[in-house]
Structures are given as C-alpha cells and as structure tokens.
Amino acid sequence: DQQVKQNSPSLSVQEGRISILNCDYTNSMFDYFLWYKKYPAEGPTFLISISSIKDKNEDGRFTVFLNKSAKHLSLHIVPSQPGDSAVYFCAASFFSGNTPLVFGKGTRLSVIA
Amino acid sequence: DTGVSQNPRHKITKRGQNVTFRCDPISEHNRLYWYRQTLGQGPEFLTYFQNEAQLEKSRLLSDRFSAERPKGSFSTLEIQRTEQGDSAMYLCASSLGQQGFYGYTFGSGTRLTVV
Image 1 (spheres, each protein chain N blue to C red):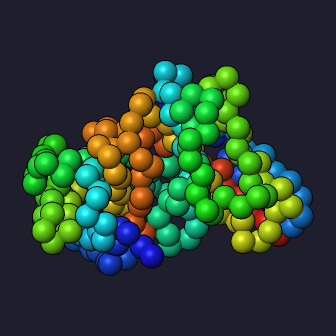
Image 2 (cartoon, rainbow over the protein chains, first blue to last red):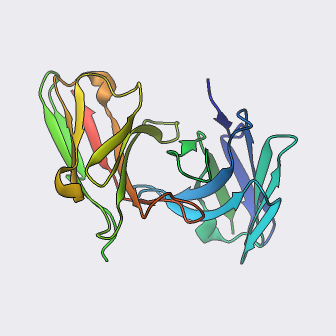
C-alpha cells in the first residue's frame, strides 16, 4: 500500500514556464511534507517543506501548496530553468516530522531550453 | 562539514556473499537513517538510529540485514548471503533531531549489484 503517490512519472516543461508537480497521500495522520530533488548519481537533496498547519510555503522560485481536505500537495517552480531537470520526490512523515520519511516514486522533470 | 559520506560508492558481489557498507553522517547529527532505492521507485525506509540506539526497523529489513551505529558516530549496514533482489542503491541520511522543517541530508549512496 503506497501512502504517498506521485502519479506522473515524467513532466516536460519549456524554460521560463511554470512546472507543477503533484503528490497525493492516503494517510491523514501525515503532518509534515517535503520535496526532494535528485540528480543522477547523487543522493536526494532537500528542497522545501510544509507543515500541515499551513497551506502554502514559498522559497524563491519554489512554492509548495497543501490541500489537506483533498490529501494533495503540489510543487510549483516558476520560472523553470534547465538546471531544474531532475527527479522530484514527495515525502511525508508523522508527529511533527518525528518519524522516518515515506517517499513517493518520483516525477522526472525535464526543462527544455 | 563535508556532508554525509558513504563508502563504497559501488559494490559488485556474487550471490551468497556478505557485503558491508559504511556511512559517516554529518558530525553533529544524532539521527542516522538507511534507505534503499530500486529503479523507478522512491527511497524505501530500512532503519534508523538516534545516537547508538536503533529505534525502528522496517519489515523490509530481513534477518539477513543488520545495521549498527557504535558510539553514535558512523554506521554500517551488512547484508549476509546476498540475493539478486538485494541489488539497489543504499542511501544513508542524517539529521539533527527530528527532521522537522529541514529534512534529512542524504549521502550519494552505495550502488550494490548482485550477480
């Protein structure tokens, strides 16, 4: 049973446009959500996170939106740059981030110049 | 602070052999995690330590797997009698306390190939 789902394996976006990556979760007890970015031959790198008490968190070009009623979160990247091309993982945890992260399968983002 | 270091980066072994991986976390981080990632999947949790205590083990961690973190510093993950299904990227991560808003810091992983 996959508790964190990323249903789009891949996404292609033109440089300068918005990239929207989606993530759904099934367990309403999750209260911390994070996005990681992974380049080939490297470990995942933390990108941005959000607590369940918020519905939006912004950091530069990256914004994460959380819709608790729909059990859905999304990562917006504006404007998209070629260096953003990577695999993006959504992750979640319980108890204010005190339990090991549960990851989705990832979405491969390709930003085309 | 040189980040999380994992050794070796690659390991090829014959089925049935034992292998051991090492992880050196960020020095002030008291939590250390092991994950496994296979092709097309996200990282899957295996086990984690707070200081030297192993706090949780996933059901993915069969009896052939053992992890240690002596003295709460580096950690080792040993796989005995390797099987082809053990082929994967093994990722180590560390954090200071609960990961909260800042997540874990991951190493670059050890890629295991069982032939």
